[in-house]
Length: 211
Ligand SMILES: O=C(O)CCC(=O)C(=O)O
Image 1 (cartoon, helix red, strand yellow):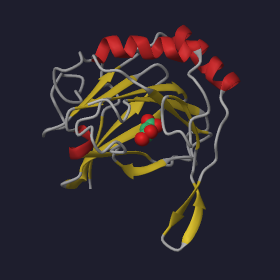
Image 2: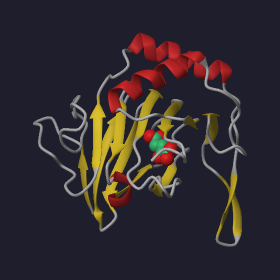
Image 3: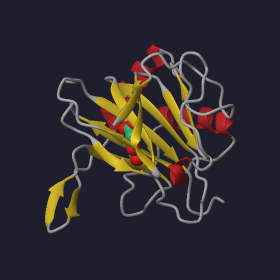
Image 4: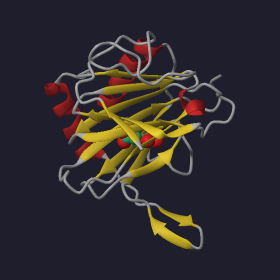
């Protein structure tokens, strides 16, 4: 297994190259696009947003069928905005909607809804997957903002799963996945019992009707 860790990955401009290491070298080759903007949200703003999200979110604890068992999803989740009607808890809070506006200006797409994932501690996780929930957006743009504790975000090429790029995402860091990122790569946040703090991740997503 070849794991490349990008602890020092720095802010990189959108739409220039793939996930970039401290020297600016593209380390995730192929037809996909994953960009890291370190400290996109200044820490005082990230603190305020985290406080708002903590105070206003109604969390869901899902259970999923895995083979012949039904298991707890190892994190809490919440949907806001114009998303899956059976899951959405309501409109976005104003503070979240302001972040959405900034992300729309940055990326040039409209984000209809946001999915919050709450990792209560290092035992919470999300397994390898790609985000292809909207079949008729073949090249979706997803803007993913980290609040709270640092966790490692791992990326691997679906055709070359033994090579993993791992980047620590900190409070206020933004990751933007676009182009063929979902078709080419999978991502995860692995369990890490050394991490004790709560992390809340906000993923802004496009709507079904957006092409
Ligand atoms: O928490 C993260 O950084 C990743 C979340 C994720 O993979 C997802 O919402 O699909």
